[in-house]
Image (cartoon, rainbow, N blue to C red; front, side, top):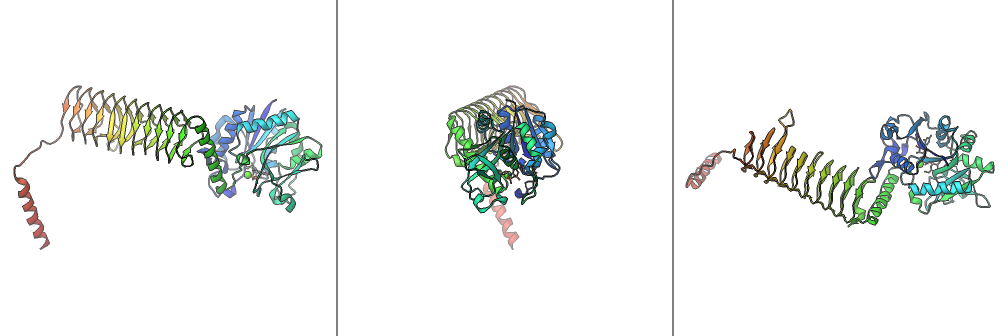
Length: 465
Ligand code: UD1
Ligand code: CA
C-alpha cells in the first residue's frame, strides 16, 4: 500500500528555553528531526512532508530537499498542523504516518510493525501507545468496555480517573489518508489549551464506528518525546545505550559502555577495542582490530584497520592501517597518515600527507606538507608554513631525515634521502642525498666556565649593594 508521512515540527519548543529550534537539538550528534526523517527513509515512504513553523528556515536548511515542506504560520495545535498538509495530500490514497519531530528514538522496525498491524486489521487509525510508569504530560489512551480505543485525553484535560491511566499516546500514528483529512474537518479547539488536537481525530473516527487499533510498544522508552532539557539528556542516554549495544553485538569491545560516546552514523569494524572516555562523532569510519582511547575524540574521520589512537583528538583526518597516533596528538583537517605511520606525543598534523612508515615521534608541527615514505622527524622539528600572509607548502621526499628542532621555512623542498642536521633553519631546497646544516658553528673556550661564573657572581653582588 502507498505510504506517506507527515512530520510535525512547527511547535516552538518553549520548554527547551533555547534559541535553537526544538527539533534541531541534537541527540547522538544528529538533530532530532534528522533521526525521524532517516527512520521514515528506511521504511520507504513515497512522500515525507515536514510541517514547519515561523522562523524555521533552519529546519529547511538542515533537511534540504530530502523532504517536502508546508508552513504552519500559527501554532494552533497538532490537529491544525496536520491540516496544513491537506492541500498537498488530500488526493492521495493509502496510509499516512503522522510522527512528531521531537521523538528521535522511534526505530524503523517499530514503525514497520505498527504499519503491519494497521494494514492487517484494516483500521482507520492505529496509535502507537506505551505503558508509562510516570505518564504525566502525555495524552492518555481511553478504552471502552470492550477494550477498544475510544479516545485520547490530553494530560491537561484529564479527570483524576483518566490521569491514572498508564497507557499513553506516543504521538505516532497511521491513518487512512482520506479518513484523516475528513475527520480533521470536525476538530475544534474546545479544550483547556484552546488548541486543535490531532488526538481528537480518534474520538471522531471511533464515533463513526471506524476501526481504531493501538500498537503497544514493548519498550516505552523508545517513544520518549523531548520537550525539555532533562528529557533531552534522557534521550541521549537511551540512544547511547542502544548504539553501544549494537556495536558490541557487531563485535566491538567497549571496556566501559557507559563512558563511551558514539554518534548515530559512526561505523566500526569488528575486534576494535574502545577504551573509556572515547567520543566518536559524525561520519567517522573505524576499521577492524583498532584500539582507540582512552580519552580520544575522533570526528568525521576515516581510520583503517589495526590502528592505535591514544588520548588524542582527530578531526577530518585519514589514518591508514597499522598507524599509531598519540598519546596527546592532534590530527587536524587534511591530515593523511599512510600505513605504519607513527605520530607520537604532542605532535600536531594539519593538511599534510605522510607516506608509509614515516615517523613524527615527539613535539612537532607538520602543516601544509607532503611527506614521502620512511621519513623521520626528530623531536621538535617543525614546518614553518605561515608567513603571516600565506600558507606555504613543504615537500619532503622518501627516506629523508629531518633532525631535532629543525625549522623548515616553507615553501621548501627536501630531496630523497637528504639529511637535515639538528637545529637547522632551512630556507633553501636540499637536493636528494645531500646533507644540510644551517646553524652557527660551535666555539669551545677551554676553562672559561669557571671564569664566567666568577664574573657573573661579582656582577650580582654589585647589583644587590
Ligand atoms: C502530543 C500529543 C499527546 C502525546 C504527546 C507524545 C496532541 C494534542 N497531544 O502532546 O497526546 O502524548 O504528543 O509526545 O497531539 N506541533 C506543531 N504545530 C503545533 C503544535 C505542535 O507542529 O501547532 C508539533 C511540535 O513541534 C511537536 C509535535 O507537534 O513536534 C507535538 O507537539 P507538542 O506540543 O510537543 O505536543 P505534546 O504536548 O507533547
Ligand atoms: Ca512533545
